Structure formats: C-alpha cells, structure tokens
Image (tube, rainbow, N blue to C red; front, side, top):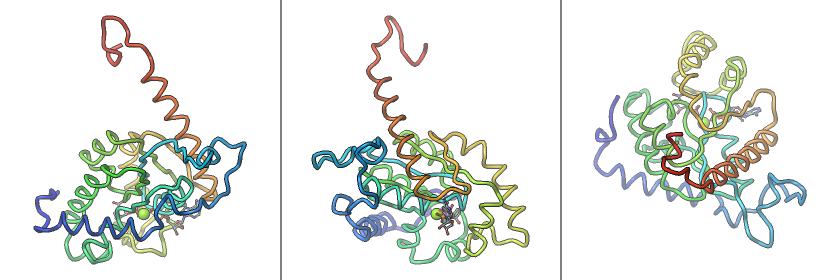
Length: 245
Ligand SMILES: Nc1ncnc2c1ncn2[C@@H]1O[C@H](COP(=O)(O)OP(=O)(O)O)[C@@H](O)[C@H]1O
Ligand SMILES: O=C(O)C1=C[C@@H](OP(=O)(O)O)[C@@H](O)[C@H](O)C1
Ligand SMILES: [Mg+2]
C-alpha cells in the first residue's frame, strides 16, 4: 500500500483546485432548489425550509458500501434534498489525475489510487455542509475509516451480490473485470462485510427507488443527531467518566 507521500509534488495543490472546481460545478447548495417540495407534515424534508432557515440533521455525512450499492447516485440525490455540497471521491480523483478510474488502476496501479483516495479523505473530512460519496474500497482502509468516523456519520449502503452485479455489469469497475464478476463480487463482499459493519447507519438499497432510500437516510440521520444531542446533554455521572460506565 502506497502512502500519500508517494504522490507527486504538487498533488495537494492540484487536489485543492480540483475540489474547488467540483464544488463550483454542482449548483451551490443554498442556491439550488430542493428536488422535492417541502412537506409541512414530514420531519424528513420539511424542516429545512422553515422561515427561510434550512435545518439539516447533520452538516456532514459520508456514504460507504460495496460497489454498485448506489453511493454515487444516492449521495448526489441526498445532497440535493438537504441543499448541501456534493463530492464523489472517485470523480474528484478522476479530475485531479486526469484519467478515468480504470486508467488509473491500469497505468498507475491500485496502490497509487489508494494513496490518492487517502489524500482526498483527509481533505473532504474538513468540508462543511457536504455529502461525500466514497469509493467502495475507501472505508476498508483503516486510517480512512478512523478519520471518517471521527468526522461524522458514515451511512453504509447494502445490496445483494446479484443486485450489485446487475448494476455494475455494463460499467467499468477494474476490480470486477474478471471472467466471473458475480463470484468476484460475492468473494470481495464477504471479505469486506465485517468492515462495512463498522459504519454508523446501515440502509438497504435492493429493489427500492432512490427517493425512498434518500428519505430513509434523512429520517435516520435526524434520529441519530437527536440521540447524539440527548447524549451530550446527559449530566456527567459523579466521580467518573461516562464512557467508562
Ligand atoms: N436504488 C437504485 N435502484 C436502481 N438503480 C440504482 C439504485 N441506486 C443506484 N442505481 C444505479 O446503479 C448503478 C450503480 O450506482 P452507483 O451510484 O454508481 O453505485 P456506487 O457508487 O455505490 O458504485 C448506477 O447505474 C445507478 O444509477
Ligand atoms: O470497491 C472498490 O475498491 C472500488 C470501488 C469503486 O467505486 P464505486 O464503489 O463507486 O464503484 C472505485 O473506487 C474503484 O473502482 C475501487
Ligand atoms: Mg460510486
């Protein structure tokens, strides 16, 4: 595994330029109209636009999970629903390196890609008001996982190997470019499953329209942030550290 020290000089500056271009490319969050009109009775989407004040359950969230579970698509839709910035780490790497993901794997090697990913994670965890869609392997790397979970909730999307196969079979995922992609999916998913389980929230994406998934994520994020606040307001137990109880 290469570390980010292996990246060429100037990579950090190129990343910064690429990130700014990505953020400017998507409509600025506060100027973009939500795709779904606010519903006054729904906790999930309506509180955002009360008296012109946008309320969000979180100011930062990342989406993790296996290839084809919908991180890129759901992340984008979630960012529109919450009027937040959107960064897809694969898209950002593609922009900074100037090559597609399969080209990066083929020409620079997977180690180089993982080093780029690590640098991108370090940077995007410093963003505010952002939805981050990770690549399927990003959360697997221990250091990435630590930084991400320290920053905010990581929502893991799940799907069966069959669904993943159907969703990825016409696209280029270098890790699935084998004679028997379904077996490869099954094997890799099994291997990675215990790590994905370390995410904050877990949402199934099989056979569900993206709007429904986005709505569930928003509802679960509200519940999560309410619980975080309730926990923070608990009085410190006498004579001890709460975490040690
Ligand atoms: N809930 C869904 N239902 C049907 N198709 C979906 C759903 N979520 C994503 N897709 C489609 O599956 C493919 C892979 O989704 P993508 O967002 O690229 O996944 P990931 O980023 O996790 O690899 C895309 O063509 C996308 O439009
Ligand atoms: O699972 C992985 O290791 C990868 C997943 C891909 O992203 P998606 O999960 O968005 O397809 C992309 O980062 C790269 O091909 C490696
Ligand atoms: Mg993706």
